[in-house]
Length: 177
Length: 198
Image (cartoon, rainbow over all chains, first blue to last red; front, side):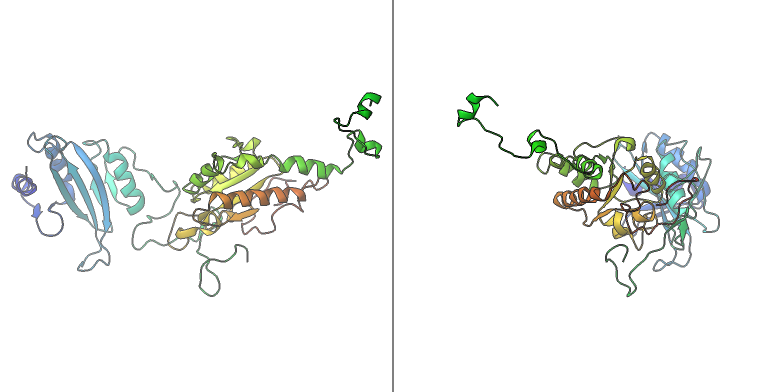
């Protein structure tokens, strides 16, 4: 199935709130966060779509991006069918204040770790995830490091973390000097 | 020596007049003897954290072969190791483990910081949120080997420096006041009562 065809099928079936975007580098389907579980279930179980592989879940911080008026987060799902050989891209936006998205880890097992990574680094909260804890940073880490308004820690467990350049602003030199 | 051997020019004759060395008796200090044995077998702790570990493995292999200097025996336990080669980026998550392994090593112990990341955070120093700004904020470092990653020759040079440092050890210096690294940018870790100060 062609990518445009898939997007029109989905937009036709779920109707309101969904929008097939064909401009830009990648055709994708924009959808509201509440629809993600039903759309993904349909994409996996429909025999003509048959998206059996979740390639990636990414989170994007749109704050300060050129041409962007909001500071929302965007969550991007890349799906693939290994039998029908087509790909689908889904995108949804969540507000910065409460970035909550329904989890798809019940549909694809692989979403478990992808969602934990998006939670760890960008702070997207996946509702219904069986074990939403940090996957890369330490458990007691403060903040979500890939957010654009992330503040670097000054100290972590007593270890001084701030960057120490030389006094003239350059880098390098012998340690201890 | 028999009379027969005396007359035979093919046989080597020990004509050393000193009665002690003639009988293979040598006099030295305990420190010198111990340090001499110590520096001939500096056993490193297997401690590969990132790409520097590849160069460390290369220096173990046949071409560079640090076994020539008695350092080829990588120990998988800190309790049998003398030298900790910290090879690779140390993240904040890893730092307490590095410190714990250092604490588990028996004295006298040495730390070799291999590569830019370990020395001062390397390419992650300014914008990396997860990398320790130099492992000497956690453990005292004896030898710094810069490079990204350092070549095996550089690591060998560093190990030879550690061998020289063995000469600073002394049995009378139990707290290793003389032998400990003078540069330690780290903070004071909580210590048990009576434990030697780093």
